[in-house]
Image 1 (cartoon, rainbow, N blue to C red):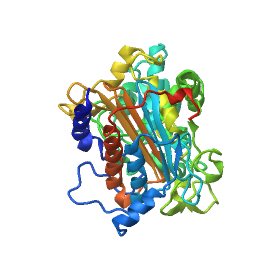
Image 2: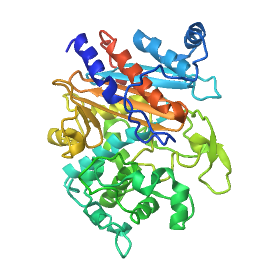
Image 3: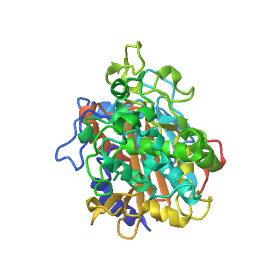
Image 4: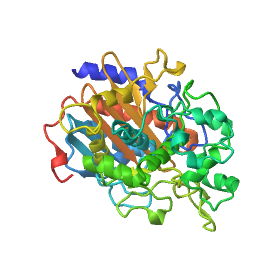
Length: 450
């Protein structure tokens, strides 16, 4: 496929990809269509000269840049949105052809961010959970049509769930966000409300993943399972508990040993809420406000380290921390092309990418498969996902036909009122930069010191 085809993919995906934010935990809804006016950004008051000069001063790390499209676009984007730093990595034909760090490790630091720095990845955790679930299906330990709460009947009260339809929910429906849960019905997203859930369940805050599930079993569903799509962080929280129930291991241990370690991506781990508990090499996160700590007696803290961010219930649905190269190592193991052996068989991968049979996706160019957004432009297949938590933003884009994958991780995002515009701008900036590269270097930095 030549460059015009790549540009046509960009044009076709521009409005389709942008606007969905994964586990964003924003206080305002995100935009799902193009804006008709120029977005208002934090640096709007600066002159073009000011912005250009500031972008030129943004630190760059890694091998000397020979992909000018990113060296131009990312510093300018960080400057425009007043973000501390980012890493970008690109894989072509399962080779790591580009990886760079831009900016700093945190808002109060002058230390440049390195290409291998771990970041919170938010809902990029969902493809990892999906692959771990499908791996158990392949091994015969699980079926996509198994009922979730037959597997985890221990989480049900003696009287059963408040809504009998909950007992009909299948593993497939959890993966596809068609299980019936709706934050509109509940009134909030329980994985981002650990103290509210703990209070309702009369337990010590913050609420655990199991407590969060038990709380939701006392609530009504928003629609019949399997009949609609509503993005549900909680559904993936349940999948984590299913993985634990089937394997007898905690979620993180099983996924690292069964999925990530065989792909040499076992540098990834479930993150921590408190700043002092972050990994030593992990970036620090930009905050626009303070909130209560989820831990009793700790008062107010910067929002990335507070209530409703990386809660104890946010593992399988949004809790992973990892580097851009490690995320590309994960993609190598599920991309369905020759080279690095895949974790999943071809038939299972096709099931993962198939269009779910719900009316929401009938005739749609884009849909949510099992753990991935899938776009099928012309004869191509594009997989993508984004993820966002207060203080972080992540985006993964995989063009299956071109065998090109991009991962970008940021240790900041726009304030909530601007998040919809930021989400759109980030994805377009990254896809445009990748599409503007005429040819990729013939190298593989997976085999080198990154």
